[in-house]
Image (cartoon, rainbow, N blue to C red; front, top):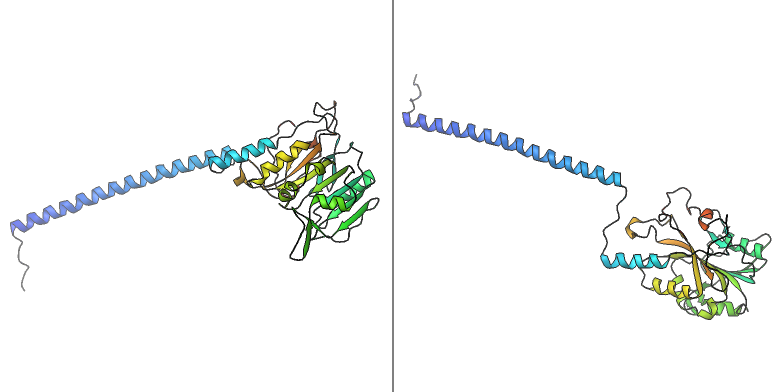
Length: 307
């Protein structure tokens, strides 16, 4: 039997050095791994603490460009309501969506216009019944036969727009032309408009002489970043006081900060009838008649501020 050859002294020394190197490497790697784990735990702990801090602070506004933020804030400032001394507020129409706040004591109404029906014109019926006036309904998309006990509906299978035209078989015309065709140019009227964003072009094309005949204009605006919005709002404010603002919680969107939603109801009262000032003691503010458009979803109003 042949035994393995004994290692020379030099080989034994090399082997010892190699083993020492391996042991040292393992020790260093072991400590490095422990250091790595410690760093990870610190980072995760800090992230958890930051997350908890943000959650306790509530929802944070999204990051938007400074120009966009300033434009939105300027529009929101322009939409700040004023307080009327001579308005008794009441909700007309539905209890939630399709209900609008108005001044019920401005009774010198001779006719009404309801733009955008969509199968529900509770507002038009209540206004027609309350003031004993005909309610002209305009909608070329959804205008089913509707009845109004104690009121009068006058349906028109036609939409409103900035000009007279036919689009995909649907007739559009201007507010001015529609009022003239009905013989209402000289009459005092109340108007509701909810036409899903088409309001900007339609109102931009409406002469001030027509707007001056409208005692109250209840609307739902759509959008916050359209460049036309500011011009239309300022045009309306030449003839009207903006007296109420309410956001539609079907349209809540934190990405639109400082706006809480992209759809919002407004009430404009003609300067001929509205008087800016302090309401009578005990008069209910318009917010007392507000209700969420969707009663099953969280609301998204601005923080309370005086109107």
